[in-house]
Length: 145
Image (cartoon, rainbow, N blue to C red; front, side, top):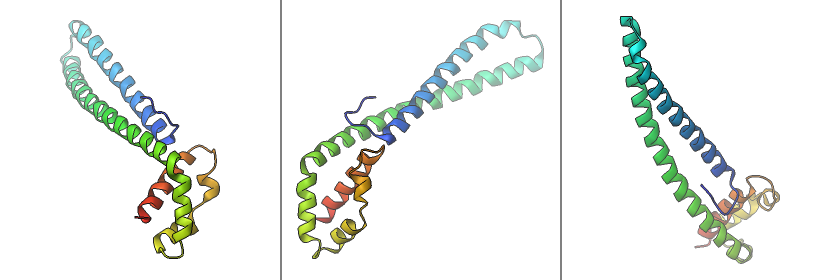
């Protein structure tokens, strides 16, 4: 999945999704390989283990396919909202910060946010800073309502 803005959280989600997809591919391949080897199994134990393997594999494939679909839907919604939030923040951050400075002494919530904000982290180019800045902007915007 693509997003306009770098996000460590989205990177983590993407890695998890990629791992799930790789596992799903391996399980499907395992199912295919096992199905074609069934004729070679003679012992009752081996046949039983083979059946268990097929049933377990099918259940894992079904579950994993569902998890992948859910993650993809969540990922897409999260990425779209994150991009919208970044775009809005890029347009309104400075004016929102200025307004917060003006009302800080009258509004306890704004005062607390402004006093406790780690601006050196929020305004840095470090990995994860964009998430921190978006989070701070959204809290500040809500406190100003």
